[in-house]
Length: 144
Image (cartoon, rainbow, N blue to C red; front, side, top):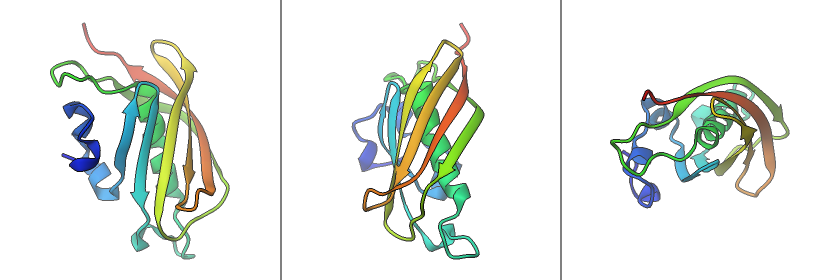
């Protein structure tokens, strides 16, 4: 469970995966069609050239876009939680960062009941755009 930063979100939003724990990102906002996560840059996120690994950036962008695409978690933990999979994802890398906190924002941009679209961007601690992405996601609808 994530503590304080998510205290205002439903219990279902505070349950985190082992992968999220490994990377250490924090969900700051998770609303219908919109999400914000943050991640502190660590030395073990650098590639052999000493710059922030693109795979970390891709992970953060895909994660926040998925949060936005699949919608806010239900307030009641007994209600089914929507989820799904990424069908396609395109990233434009525009810069890099070596320290501080990354802020990653995702927004659902359209779609229907099962296929949805989202975009995301990541900025460094100074607010400089590091990367932007667009994705197509398939919702996993709850069983009736």
